[in-house]
Length: 318
Image (cartoon, rainbow, N blue to C red; front, top):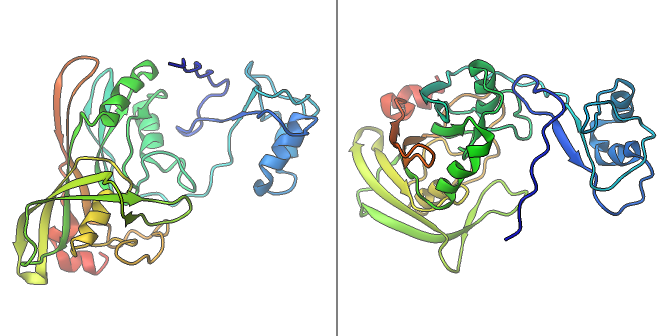
């Protein structure tokens, strides 16, 4: 088994709960200087941006000292810098901590808040918020929830223990229970276990089912239904963790989750700042045995899905 290289400590502190960017200079290429490589690699930032960062001493090496623009290019070495944070619309919903000890933090994430920095969501993410609010710069997510999905997320406190908690999810040793609001179909026989093969291509918004050996397994149960508006409240138990798995399986059953902008029809990503009609999917429970302490944990979200609490308000975008 190949031993993983230790991760070099960042020579720059976090900013607003966000880590600095680390760039490894790749082998190959014809760059004479570090500046030449970064100017090409970060061309999308705009003309003069990289030169301005060098002039201000914002690009540093492993020793924390600014890298000169004419520093020779050495493959395999690293440089660090802070990205210019995008202008983000604050997500106006609370991020609740339901449990905290010296090893983990369990948070109850609202809809529309990304779990970790990605794309245009950087400082306005659950991870960055918790780092700032709890004062734990080493905090890291052990898994991830989609930005549009609300509910429980597990974070680790100590970097050396992160792998143990991530292994729980990789080896399916975490019991995850979700709740969803979707149309009620009296002809749909439930409970049932759905098995299919799901793929999601890079650059595509939606995943899709294809033929072949199943790689996605979900159990779907009806908790209750209401004649008014023809809605059902469902318990969803994923046996695997494919991207958008529950959303794809509910759509395949003919009862797509309310508020879904991708299934069954792609209407586009929900723009930042549009907090109307949240996706009615909630990570309700997390249950696992702590790999470090041996403690049996079971956590439950206190959130209520809006379309079930008041469909008319949810549908009206209130």
